[in-house]
Image 1: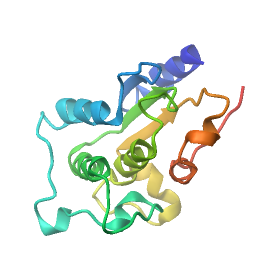
Image 2 (image 1 turned 30 degrees about the vertical axis):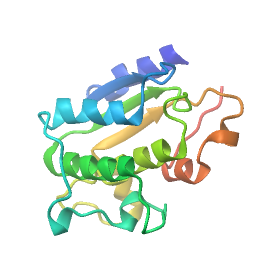
Image 3 (image 1 turned 180 degrees about the horizontal axis):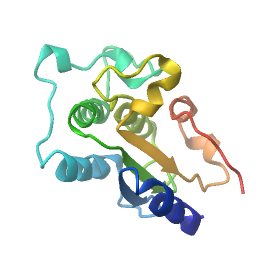
Image 4 (image 1 turned 180 degrees about the vertical axis):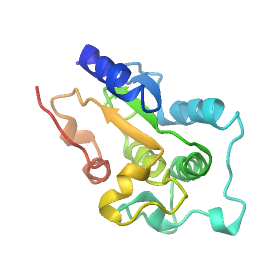
Length: 171
């Protein structure tokens, strides 16, 4: 699977945008480290904030997920802000190719919700999105990933996983 995903990323996606190939098998990889990498590479190391009213975090910012308004994890807020900043500043797609998105550092519910928030808030801010069906085409951050654990459905946040709008291929 790794070779297949790597080949797809380098041959099909690289001509269209930037690629970050991430090894979810590494127990030290986390959504926080992925966000750090995105900030360092694509935002010149400047962490975006939600200081202005127009950039503040709202419940609807993470797709269909509706967390309690009293508790939105800091990681999700950070991912939302980074997604919005990438959507407003980047001119070509950023593909996250994640081997083993169900790895130990990526499988907890807050991490899954943060990945959804990052992707769903990276809409290109030029108004070219005509309707919700085309919305995913206008996102700067796109995800290609493998799920490797046979019991992944038992511990992954399936609501968050649904919000990734997967096209699945089982082999």
